[in-house]
Length: 260
Image 1 (tube, rainbow, N blue to C red):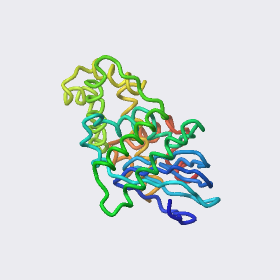
Image 2 (image 1 turned 30 degrees about the vertical axis):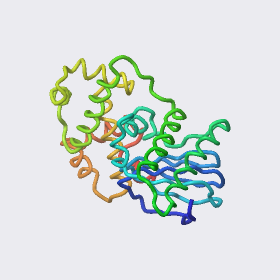
Image 3 (image 1 turned 90 degrees about the vertical axis):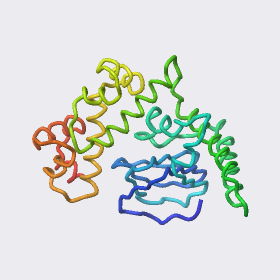
Image 4 (image 1 turned 180 degrees about the vertical axis):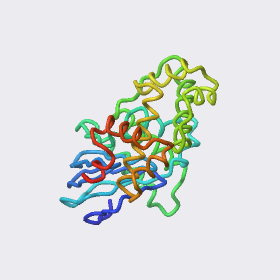
């Protein structure tokens, strides 16, 4: 891990995944408006597209810092949905900090070390890097609590992944649940069963949660008026947007912004 600035106060996002294996030191990091206290023997996962910044480095960090684009491992025949499973099925999108048990730490350190060793060669092999990265991500999948595969899981996982993509594409609109089901060639009942299987919630609540997260990002990183934030997320009624936000966050959008 190279030396890091004491703090970066401007929230920013990357088009790649970022992983920290912290072996020594302490740091406070903010991801999507939530602050995390990172200590030794922990793994910190930042998904592609998340807003983040480190608030301050309390003591110098030692360990590894890894960055890679998701498309680097899209060709994995063994596990093409690996990143999606890590981010969306094992909650690393919302719980990015993983303490590492002592029994697991040597294996993770070895995986990072092999990647670093190969990367620093004069002729690093993309295939070797990909293989080592795959081993590392599988260890993290185990650590995060791998979603147990059941009959039909891969078929349903594809639908769930397509739904997440559709929700991202429709953040500025409010299509009906029937519209989402139609796009996926499912009935509403089938879609809700798949969503409950992977997220333990309903389709409508899944969509609402994603919109509220985007609202929090906009409130924290822009000076747009509340009504413009609501409109950008497909809400014609600002009052309804404010009520929905308060139901999720326990405060109004204006209070949320003032408390940052």
